[in-house]
Length: 342
Image (cartoon, rainbow, N blue to C red; front, side):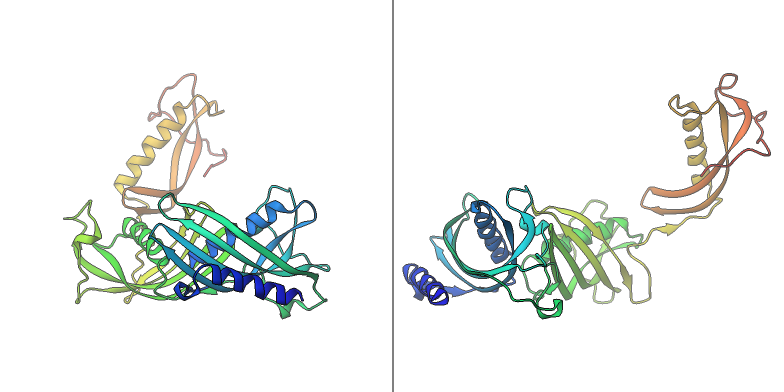
């Protein structure tokens, strides 16, 4: 009877929305996920006690467009009792599956997205079959937080790759800019936000960095004789759809790393001059709890991206005190048995 009620409810929703105008939607589409996220949060907010429910999977999605301003979404999804209490202040993405005698169920929802004001409203929703799931082994059901593969033409991927490529072009010491050629694979993981793992191919453009210092790739075209590169990129997007982390690994076919900093020689004159200024600033900083002046000893490791250096170096205490000397001079010598600092 419960299953019949659910089917009847969905049939009523579809009929009321002029079923002949409904179109099928991809359950893995980001917009459909956002709609289900809104519906599930609405359901959890109405619970008075017990635990929140988390998304198990989306099973069906249909759309109806109205005057290009409204999109009616009719979705079915399955839910699983989570580990977070109702009223805990957490959202369902922060919860895990409840391990002991969890309740499971299915929901049908009608959600309208108002595109002109960028708002979403849950019109109606029915969740049924909320029964305790019989004991099963972990291998028998999908886990919350598993990666799912996305289609390569998924619209949500291009803004992410564009942001990653802009970061790569900033970091790269290659003389030319690179742009997207094709997406190889893409997958997404639901966390408190979304993790993406993207594999794609870049191509060298005809735009030189020496000529186009502040440019848009819209002005460039892929160079058919230029190099290609493969990128393996991880991107984190928070719940506000803001990109908060990009990790890049991009290598050309001749194994040149586009996303790696360049190594700098330990005796590079520009680097040593900068370190001399750093030591002077360190010695003059009144907040540093040191009574002696310190002197640069050696560079351990140094890299450079654009004009930014990353350096590991040692300094050592001298026989000159801050009270007697303002800056290091030739008379300031290293104390033989003092401790070096990195």
